[in-house]
Structure formats: C-alpha cells, structure tokens
Length: 463
Image (tube, helix red, strand yellow):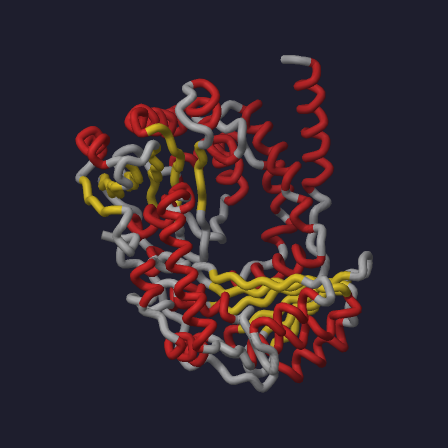
C-alpha cells in the first residue's frame, strides 16, 4: 500500500467517525390542516435563501393503463402558466428575480422544487399557490408539450439507449404490476393524451388530501404557516382514491427480453429482479454491499468489467426503493461483439458476490465512502426541504436520517455478507433485458432463458 493511499484511508476513517454521530436533521414544525394537507417549516437564516419542496402523493402509479406518462405531462404543464400568467409570463416572473422552479413526476409522487431569495419568498408562494390551485393547462401548451415529448423519446432511442435500459428492464420485470409503468410514458401512450385527460387527472389526483408543502430558509415560520393555511386550508380533496398496491413477487426462473436496435454498434443490458422497499430494516448493510458491488467507481463491477477486462466504460448495481419492493439490477453496455462476454462476466461477479462477499478491510472502505458522501446532501435549504418532504411522503421518521451514519459505522461485516444472500438475486432467478443487434446476438443470448423480442421502433416499452 502506498503512503498516499494509506493517508487517504486514515483520513476517510477519521472523517467517517466524525460524521457518523453528527449528521442529524434539525427540528421541523409540522402542521396538518383540516383537509389533510401537511405543512413542514424550518427557519434557517444563515443565508438569505428559501427552498421549497411540494409533494403531491400519487405519481405514475395513478396513470391510466393506456396513458402512461400522464402524471409526468401534468407535472411539466404546471410550469406552463398558472393564475393570471401564461407560460411566458410565468417563466419571466421566475427569471426576473433569479429564482428557480422545476417540476417532476416520479413513480409515487409529483414534486415541485423551488429556490428564491428570501426577499422574494412572497412571489415564490404566490407562484406555487397558482400552480396548484389554478394551473392553466391550456390546450395549445398541452399539444406542444405532447409532440415535444414524443420527439424526445424518438431521439433517445436513436442516441440515448443507456437511459432507456432501466425503463425496459422494470417494464419487463414487473409486467402488469403498477411499478412496470414508464414514468415519462411511451410514444404510444403519450400520443393518446389530450387536454381533457390532464383536466381529469387534476380533478381526480390533485387536492389538499394529497399535499405536502416543505419550506426551509430565511423565513418567519408562523407567518408562513398562516399564509399557507389561508391558501390551501379549504382546498378540495382529490376525487379518486390512491390505488392500493400489493407488493410484487420476485421472479422465479429466467426470462429474456431482446430489444432489437438494428445495426447498433453497442449492446446495453439490465439483469435483475425484485429488491427491497425504502423502509428496508437493514438499509445500512445493503448500502455498504451495493456500494462495494457496483455503487462507486472502484466497485467490483467496475474493477473487473472496465479496468481489467476493458469491456465497458461503466457497470453499476442499482437499487430502486419505493414504498414497496422495487428493483435491484446490474446494468452495463459493451460492443456488440462482446455482449455475451460482458454478460457472462457480470453473472460470474454476481456469483462471486454470493460466494465470497467482501472482506473486512473492503467493507470498512465502503463505510468510509458512504460516510464521506452522505453529509453534504443535507446542507442547503432546498436539500433540507426535499428531505423533510420525502420523509413525510414515505411515513418515515427523522431517525431514518439521524441514525443512518451510526448504523453505517456500526454495521457488522457478517451482517453485510448475510444481506447479500437475502437481497441479491441468485443466478437461477433473473430477468435479462438486452438492447442490441438482434441478428448478431439472438442465438447466443438464448442460453440465458426464453426470449421475447421487441423492436426499438415499437412505440412502447413492453411486448
């Protein structure tokens, strides 16, 4: 071991120990209005900024079966005019004061993120109130956005397949389960969406009973609560109920989806199964294992597949953890000619993970890595607002954050090794999704399981 590496490891170990017990969320004032809306406020006066995170519970799991992407389109439309402002005026109001405001749909929620100078907090609240209570949802803007989304998806299929392999993977894994939905929709589903669908979505899935408002920064909490209560306290409830979703069962056996990309020079692959939920009790041990397997640049997957074998520029192990068990997968890409070699190597590394796990020094390095990266995510007003909102949305307490560092530091190496067998799929139970030149790789990938084929030109993500 070089002196530089030894010094770095000593520093990381010291830093990890220092951070483990020191990272705690500040207190937050929680107010629940009569209609079910939740307000989360925290005064943070070190800089003259205010950050806001609004969450509307629901998200893509509420999209109609034939209109995936409806919640995503609705979220984007919230930025395109509200109240007395059309799309141009709305954008100008934000730009004129140097603020930022963005919307996003996720699997289980729609979120609005805003950051303004404290002197413009009143404008921020005004804009957010208009977005929620009086969105324009104009037919002309809907039509423009719909066509833009379809063209963007087509462009991604031409040059951004790496970002789509997860979409195909989850769709093929979860099949008819709500978690199979493509959050941003497909060409086929988006093409069906009209203004009336967005108006119906607003009526059915947006209302006071779904609302979480988190604001952190240079504010007067009492005055802000009064203002938000006046604005949203009488807001109607969403007309539809949130869907009741049962956990998806892990796949037994193997199956393969081959997405034919024509004569593409590269193959992209996703290998996985059902994983765990956000409230998984042994999150610390799993995060350590996943960091070491495929969550950092010096992970096992990266070392073996990129550095040693030269088969790819990137290989990762990804965990999606919504309110119910999500997915766990290996993802990578390689030249078409080395598709089988790369997949075989990924499988051998998954087998190695199960058979040998990681030794104690490697586990300690994973702990240090996590502890060194965790604290900076909780520094700004916007980051704190987002964290408060997420905890509320998932029904988690502050201990989810406050006890995380100590849980990482105290994680027993044997428990880390045991969690691998409990969570990571074994080689007999896997879903394979390969985006590549079907003519070149079809016969070879048949060894992984029965193949279902889909062309990249099909306007959907499921067979």
